[in-house]
Every structure is written in structure tokens, then in C-alpha cells.
View 1 (spheres, rainbow, N blue to C red):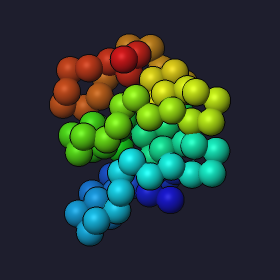
View 2 (cartoon, rainbow, N blue to C red):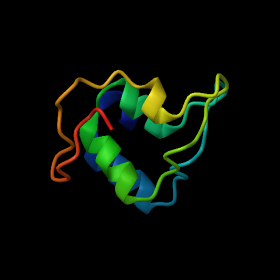
View 3 (cartoon, one colour):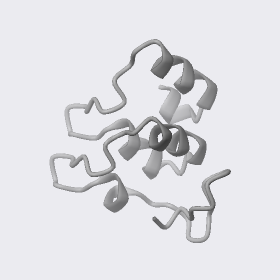
View 4 (cartoon, rainbow, N blue to C red):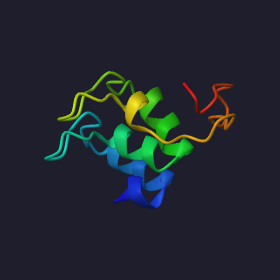
Length: 85
């Protein structure tokens, strides 16, 4: 739920209490897939710093990079990276 609502502080707390950042839902989407699709850049940054699997594939074979709808030119706060990976 923290991913869907963009609550970065809640995401940090969940990770700190042991939530698996690489777990996948029934359709194979990881937390990173969801954050990418919703353009929640703070969540993406947190997951990247926590070494989430950037190449995790959902059931259709799409990685978070390929499943996202990031806005061109959008920057990940504090990383210097653009949302266009």
C-alpha cells in the first residue's frame, strides 16, 4: 500500500522491519514495478538504494524498466538519474 500511495516514510519503515523488497504479487509485479508505473520516484530511489532486483520480470516478461510509464526528463530526487532509465 505504501507504494501505491507514495508514502516513502512508510516504505522505509517496512523495509527496516524486514519486508522483502523483491517479493512479487500474483501477476509477477514487484514493488519496483508498481512504483515505476505510478511514477513514485522517492519509492524508486529507496528501492534502488536497498538493492532491489532491477531485472525482476513479471509474468509477461517485463522488467520494471519496461513496465513503467515514467515521465521523460523527470529526475530521481538526489540521484541525478532521469525517470527514463
